[in-house]
Image (tube, rainbow, N blue to C red; front, side, top):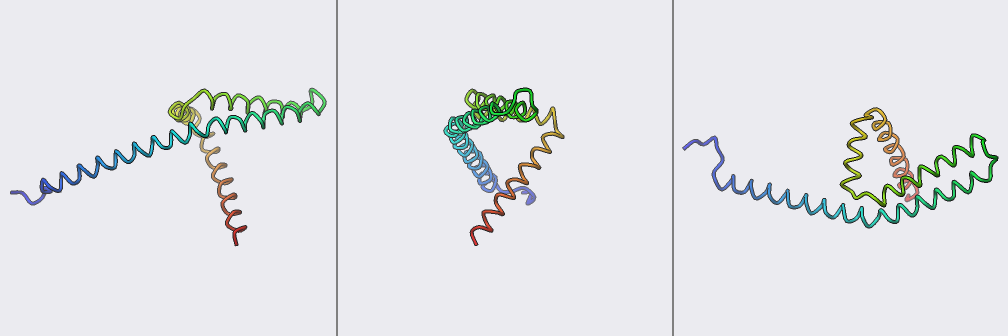
Length: 131
């Protein structure tokens, strides 16, 4: 018998382990999707509230001015984002994100870097406030 190959019992153990890992990954994926679905309505509501606030603020400035137009544009984008979140499940969001990253890798990298910077600042501020 060739000693280079694992015994059948080792192969069976590896197969069971791989199966268990796949099952746990599938369970985790389902839980993430459920949390996303529960949170997306609240997120969409907050985005719409922010859009309304921006739009109201824009109305306080003279029309045709740069700041008013910028605020109104941001309000419209937030409203569109809220509608998108309400209408798409996690799988659709992930697919759209992958497509966007493939189409615009430089922009995606810049957004990821900015998000990482903001997250890092928020986490470091939370730690410094804890002490």
